[in-house]
Image 1: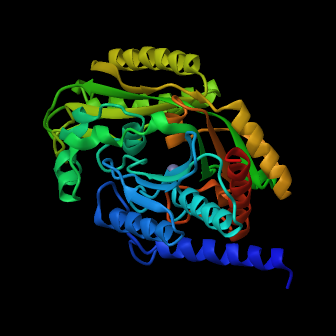
Image 2: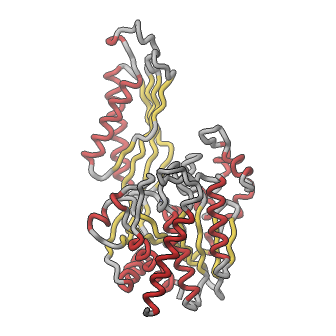
Image 3: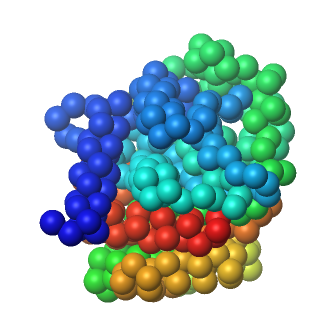
Length: 413
Ligand SMILES: [Zn+2]
């Protein structure tokens, strides 16, 4: 067998083996779903496994104060090229979101170590803590700590069981007070992240990889609709101020408005009703609207439209309604030179490629506000993600890892 073929076969075997190993940490059961939430034992076990894998390559690796795994391939000088993604998942998530980026980075380190490559600048592999933010609504916690954001105010956030974030950190052996020491961005030159597309474009176009041009921004809106509680049996239908009926009408129209707009995506992902009894007319309905677009102006325009729409329905239904913006994440343009490096690497690897935006947020969005960042997408079957059915073929995963490896080699030379 030719040397190149054997090396490729080994790379495929190792990458698939690593993904299978990882998918055992936090496996939910028979459906193939995985739950590795922030600070949970399964995530920490997966992180510990990663540390061992990197150390086996003769490199330093450890968890920082934010629970990020940071592996370091030292060089004589210069700031680091960071390759990263995340090992945490949403509850009952898939095997590839985040994990594939980390495994591809590990595969790149393995391949470059094996080939005798000598980096001219340090190469770090980082698995960020809590990218999904699924447990405490704290997305990109680890990368935010990595760039030095003050996150102390998040310590009182609670999960579904009432556990505070600060206590979850303590239970895992970390301390919120020490978080500032996770800041490492000042020693970083640039950032690369491979990720599954989580959408249908690459598969539909039969394209191997996507070079990401920008990451959509988002606004988290909070709508509170207030009516009046009443007896389900004695209050006539025409005399009700039912907050849930108003909220339902609003939600339907919000999604219609987003479809008509074309530049935004809007999702109502949570709703809470109170008092919350089957025989009581809802007095209050509270729901969230996640609005995303690649331009801030599109988010502003859509928010204004929502505000008018909510006020109109509240008036018609005799309700009060308020709309607040709880959080805003500006869109990010990825670095032109790094896009160029990824394109060159795709050409070298013989991979077909296209340029595309990312509708989903990633750690690259946080890191890329401080240093140049680039992202590479590989196909997701059926565009399915955050779901046990999430799937990327071995061929696609290995091809993506190869493009990533070539880009790293080029940028660290
Ligand atoms: Zn992800």
